[in-house]
Image (cartoon, rainbow, N blue to C red; front, side, top):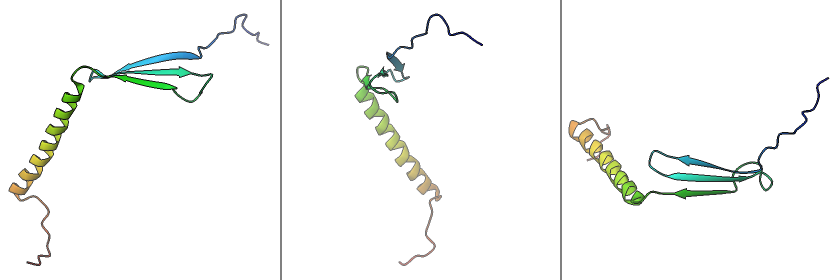
Length: 87
């Protein structure tokens, strides 16, 4: 038969995990296993300076790209044309 280890290994009940994204966003996830076993009890995000302007610029460029591609398709005649014309 095996023996119990002399010293039991204590797992931490409170800990933090920090995630860093490519955009520069830093997310801190705080866990407390005595309060809630299934996930974090608090999540906080830190955004770099100028992040809002950068995101608005990316959204605007994506919107223009989407419009541009539709216009280009229309000029090439590749858009779906309905077979039933009433006019």
